[in-house]
Every structure is written in structure tokens, then in C-alpha cells.
Image (cartoon, rainbow, N blue to C red; front, side):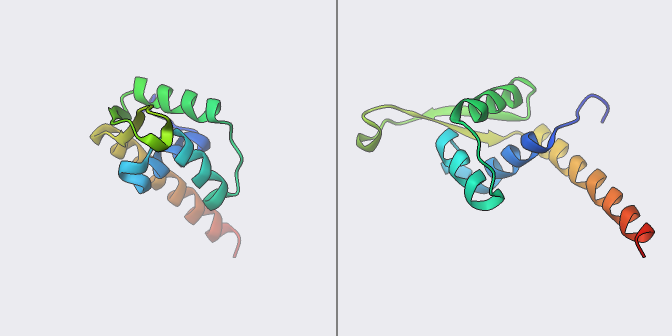
Length: 107
């Protein structure tokens, strides 16, 4: 898919959106990046990436109801689009193929 390349950080964000489901919002993604990938990211960097991925059509978002714990503010929940799933799977296939070739050379 020419022109549909995603970088490592974008890929991790998309994977976390898929994993987190209804809990896929900015702060939960920041927390999971730290917990699962031992990677620190600012909330601003995550929001910028989420917005960029949404603009590319790989994600969609929806504002969910306000909660008392958030001081009445609403959460923007992100979800992979069908197109985003295809791009993510394509990225995985490319990486798997390269890793396979690398492992053959390393023997």
C-alpha cells in the first residue's frame, strides 16, 4: 500500500487503540505506552499522533459522556477503522517478512 506507511510510534498507538477498546483515550494510551512498551510520551505527542491517524482515516473518534472523576469533562474515545486495521496488518506483514529474512541470514 504505497503512501500508507506508518512509523513505529504510530503503529504502537494504533495497536493500543485496538487493545484498549472503549478505554482508548489519550491518558490511557500514555499509561499503556509506559507499562507495556517502557516508553515515555507526553499527552501532547499522543494527542497529535491520534489526530494525525484520524486525519489519515486510520482511526475514528467519538466524545463519550462526562464523569465526576474527570470534573465533568468528556473523553474522546478512539477506534480503529476498517482501513486502519488493513494498514496495521500490512505493516505487521512487512515487519514479519523482514524479520524472517534477517533470521535466515543470522544462522
